Length: 185
Ligand SMILES: [Zn+2]
Image 1: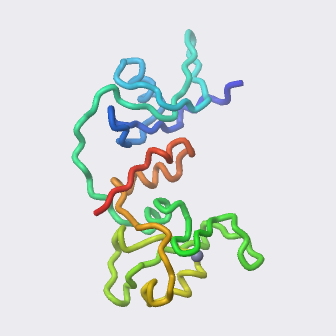
Image 2: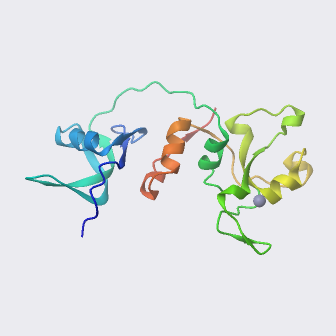
Image 3: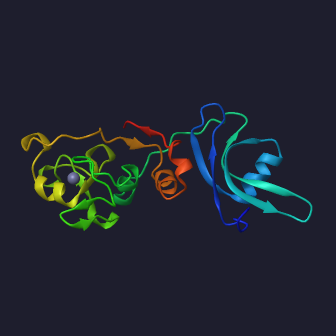
């Protein structure tokens, strides 16, 4: 059974050959690219688009047939971007929304942006200096460096290719998440 026509849905467009995420586009534009032979379907959404004569499977991810050279854009740092980049996972204890902590189920609102090198000591709002932390770990860490408290980072914070894509992908379907590409500064 197909569900309602997802004309307002979004499709992740990947570059040719390296499948690097390029943009999030509309369903009609994605179908046009596929019908014009400029892109191929990588993942289906499970939805269908019914016209008078035809029925098209609606893609969730498509890739261009040929590689296009895109200048690497600098990702703008944002708190929301850091939380989405880290998938709302605490970099110190690994806890995520839905976990039961001290009798309370954590929601996304219980997660904060921690400055690994504290702002009070000159730490900057940079992708590589910030990470998602649960309230408990952020509070415990305070103005200290992780190694001063014996706290370990579970991963190294990295710069995403574009902050807008990280946010778009972070709020998109799970099928998109494997295509997020994270880069060093
Ligand atoms: Zn934590």
